[in-house]
Length: 125
Image (cartoon, rainbow, N blue to C red; front, side, top):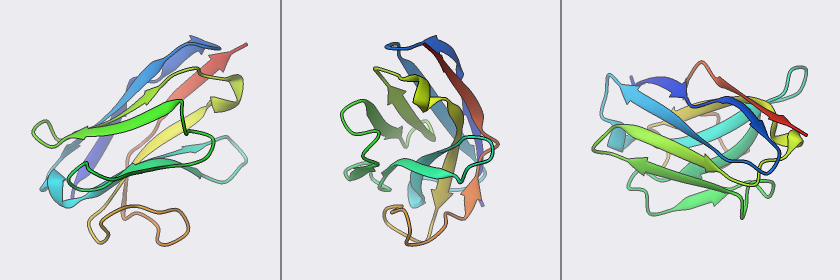
């Protein structure tokens, strides 16, 4: 099973950008559909974006469309989340997720099998 480690979180002003990275190890990265989720303390974990195993297909939450971009580099075993035009409501812990049993992570269909430990993103107003 793959292990996931997120990085790239931090404090940014509203309107700024951050790029999150999720490094995978321990298994064949290209056999996993990948996704990003986020969670505010006391609230449910929300889907942000996902990408297919070969990187061709992506899927975004409405809140992320037009501002965030998910990508992956299978040669580097890494998935990225480029976040632009950040808003204070984007503040959350961001989690990377992996699932070998689906071609694309779609919210509500199945819970991904593997999760990272999360990275905190704080957007100040």
